Amino acid sequence: MSDKGSVDLSGLVKAYDVRGTVPDQLDEDLARLFGAAFVEVTGADAIVVGHDMRPSSPGLARAFAEGAAGRGADVTEIGLCSTDGLYFASGKLQRPGAMFTASHNPAQYNGIKMCRAGAAPVGQETGLREIREFVERWSAGEPLPAAARTPGSLTQRNMLGEYAAHLLGLVDLSAVRPLKIVVDAGNGMGGLTTPAVFRDLPVDLVPMYFELDGTFPNHEANPLDPKNIVDLQHKVRETGADMGLAFDGDADRCFVVDERGEPVSPSAITALIATRLLAEHPGSAVIHNLITSRAVPEAVREHGGTPVRTRVGHSFIKAEMARNDAVFGGEHSAHYYFRDFWFADTGMLAALHVVAALGGRQVPLSALVTEYQRYAASGEINRVVVDQTRAIAAVSEAFAGRDGVVADELDGLTISTAEWWFNLRPSNTEPLLRLNVEAADADTVHRLRDEVLAIAVPDQARTRGV
Image 1 (tube, one colour):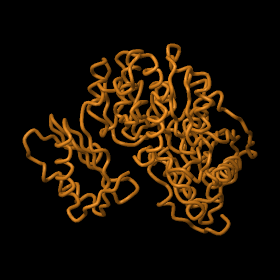
Image 2: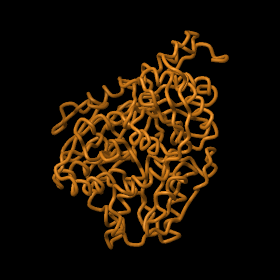
Image 3: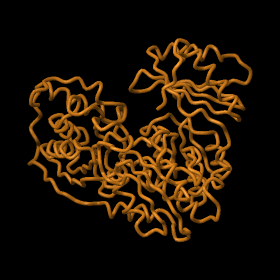
Image 4: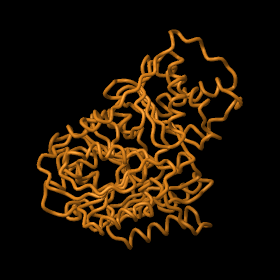
């Protein structure tokens, strides 16, 4: 590298991807080494690379491609794309892939999401640790091993049309009635993918912030934060739309609001899509993480499927999807995974399922999802806690021995009874404890929330949202 010398990648390489600020944590020299290491670990002779709309993304993606080509791999550069567009390319071409994006993070961030051929995830246990080790050694001055073959080629290919056609071929939209849908792309990649996918549908599309702008001039492209969907909610009410959709920065997640502008929980969307796919594939497994609503496994069982509970995190979901040959999987964070999409997550395909479900009925979206919104929930509450282990142990001890209480440690601590449950788990990347509570009524949710927080973080009074 030019002037970095040895670098500590502990703050840059996360559990599932690479993510940090540009250029102090991630620059083109480092991206070039990541490209070389990616080929070294995957053994690929051909890969695919894409990027989002952030100002730093084209340069970083090209540097990664050059590093990969220097190790002998032919690189297909698909340019601007959503993360699920990169997964599509990896599946379609059966090549490992790398997507340059920092998803919903602010403009100064960028990162790399990597996968093996067929969109299989690359995380700490599936190659990311080895990639990091190569980059650390090479950045410290250890020479790269001599390439075993001549340098690979760099070829450009626009796959947006193929991506749109593939998704549209997975959902029967033939009976959809005319709908008015507001879409807030947040100046992210949804501004590119939505017109391509929705072009020929019977949809009056009301676009918001479709201009690709990685400085995010209107609001952060993070619909999980309620303040970032206020504009969408207002526009849905103002235009009398049937629903609204909001995509995050790299457009792999999709959030939904109903005709009243009210958010529809990702758990309800998970249950809705699961029932649709179980009707087509009876008896299939459906994956859900442990902080989705109880309504999800209930709905799966009611429609003849097998619910499979797993840890939070896309690498765990994808592994369980493949292990169980699951038809579908959903997370509280609005990541939705499909067997017909190489077990990968795609917010756009989830959106099309909601369009098909609503467009095939003469009822508003609020009525369509009522049966899946069965419980009150806290949403995810974050508190800064340095000694997370001690805090979780204190909560476990406080609830131990209570009548009807069951505890498990699949991911952090889950305490449940027949009437309620809560999960308390540490963040993988920050000194945070994350709390989710669900119960039959809001009063019980508030009581449990306050009790758990008083035990876990007695010296803190302020809650920090996601």
